[in-house]
Image (cartoon, rainbow, N blue to C red; front, top):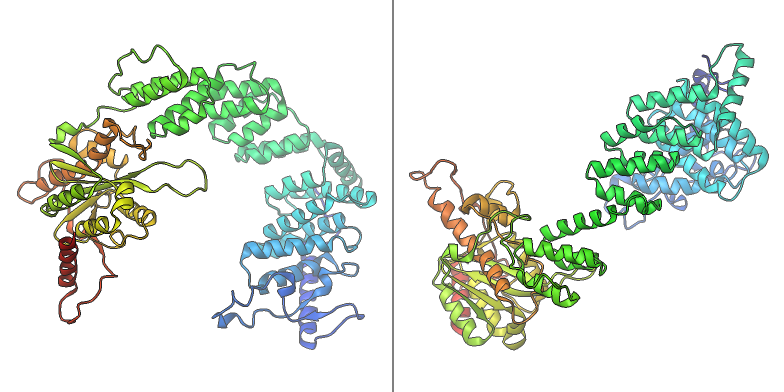
Length: 630
């Protein structure tokens, strides 16, 4: 099958024409010449949105001469401008503009959109098709410029189109479609879809183009439907599913469909599968939903059901999907979010209570039952967590002797004295989660500092309100001490949140001898819980991570959870350290280099008045003064 360009211009002729116009352009550029009084020469692209503002070009001396000159006529009146000249000038604009690619695209798209209002000949839509025929000679610019001018035309068509131009453009677009598919004009398959959609090409338009071809060439040619189906088959073979579906939908070609549908799902082309099923109708939609259910893709199934009103056909999928979502939230410890997701649905609330029972979250069980008057759960003994997680580490396994709540001056000073006598402590903090998108996080509520056998939990909110200066001195004494190794897990995040919550305190702006445990291990899986399971044989119960840490008093379970997060850091360190010495390395443990991961941030420490002491001595002296004053 031979398909010829309806413009009757060969690629060689087009290239020669472009070269001729390039020569003309350079001559005009040198002489600053105007043709017929209609072509104006300008020396800057700023009016077209293609040059960055002066502030953006500051210190870019090598780019000062990149504005060049341009014929504005091509972007204001296309009455006497051919598609080749127009495209060449478009390229010049793109090359010489100083903006980034995306900004250039948008600026030029706007320019082309405006140009289409100014009488291009023989008409806006036909002019764009002529440009698409010529664009392949522009090489690397072809694909981007094709999308640019087609998207500009799509905007223009919303305002309506001259019937004569519309008819001529549709016939020409159908011919272009044949030429692209036949390999005579080189365009990306995504452009093919845009062409058939924007110009609303149907099978009868393709049929007409084929018939005209037969008359011109006296050759045989397949019918339009066969021609399109053959092309679509090639797209499916190359797994270009979305393009294939878009063409089948545009040309209203329906096939049996099930094997095609399963192939798309198998290759995870879910958007294409959804589009195909919607086009095929209710029966295919039901097949798609059932396939999603069988593959446990419940969210995809639920979305299709909701969008296409299939609730009666699949009454149980809603609750299955919601239950799956609730379980994922429970596993992440997002209980408040999960509760909101139930929308007061009693069946879902009962399932959430069941998840809390499985997680061993007894206070959440009581809270939900009281709030929603759920009976039958309060008398049931809450089991150890079994389904959501494996066995958890308990505080008594770490031989922690006491958890001490610190919310007054005496407790603060006693805790500071104890911690000063330790060589290694674990540090962690908690704050109430905020689930409102875009809102500021809540203030840090508590800070836990653990030695090997004691855990102190500082009520930061109350201490900051009552004794901010003493709190500042005591915590500075701990965090800035070069004699105490502070262990944390992702503590850089915590210290940033602490500084944000309590900006008036100096203690969170500097620290020394901080070891972030997660940096010591390569790609730790499962966070601190996963690390604890790897080193100590059991993970951490994270169900209370996102509980309300601003309530007072905290529950016993909350206190134990908070204490465990800090204490486990010390025991991980001691356990690995005892197995990391060359003489005692046991099987399954590699030597861990801790010292290289210890960090400090003491850039704001004042220099010694005498100027002779080292920075370390200065820091130790300042730390001692803070401690004495407290």
